[in-house]
Structure formats: C-alpha cells, structure tokens
Length: 140
Image 1 (spheres, rainbow, N blue to C red):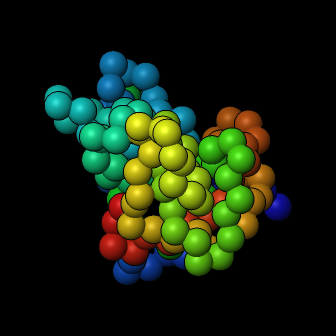
Image 2 (cartoon, helix red, strand yellow):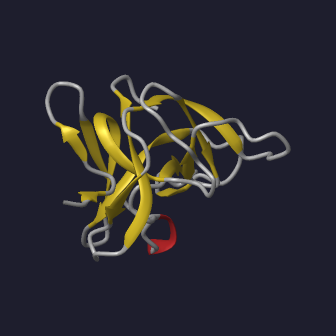
C-alpha cells in the first residue's frame, strides 16, 4: 500500500497541522518543504535564507495544509537521496535529502531524521514520487 505525501502517520501529541493560503494562489506540491512569504502565504523552499516551517499537505479550497511537526510524515526526495533510518535531513529546492550538498547554495539542515528508507508515495491526485518518512516532533 502506498503512503500519502504530507501526512503524519503516527498521530498523537506530537503532530501540529496548520492551514495557509498558497502564495499567488498556486498550491505547493504535497510533501515539499514550505516557507512563509512576507504576506503570510506559503511557498516551496528555494533559498538557504528561507526558514522552513513544515511539510506541505493536501490543498483544499484556497488553503493548504502544512504539517508543522509530526512523526512518520512522508516527503518528496531530491534526486540521488539515499535516506536511512536515523540519518539527518536536509532540504534542497524544497525536496528532502540525506546529505549536505557541497556547492549548492540552497541546501539547509532541518530539525528532523529519516525513519524509513526510500519508498514510493502518492499525492492526493494519485501521482507517484520517490519519498521517505521523516520524524520532526519539535518542528523543522
């Protein structure tokens, strides 16, 4: 069974899910790292100066869920990522990876660890992505 991107699977006291308007009305792809724009909307992380606030979830009518902290949340992987249980998590261009990429200016460490290896996960439209689950109980 395929997992859903941007959804915490271990529900309980550790998960916080908020709802934001997407920047320019364009939803952020599910399972990507998001940052808050100056106007309070969300957009995909794209620069090292961006402060990652969570993982994008399902887009609803004019709003989008953002997992601010949670356990076993499936995220999209960057090309070449080789996650493993317990490895540190980095974000590059909105996608998640297991290693700092030298020479990339938008690669940043976040407060999370991988809790699975590479799997296939789906977005709400059924599109498949390379993914892995991360734990970030204290927020990214």
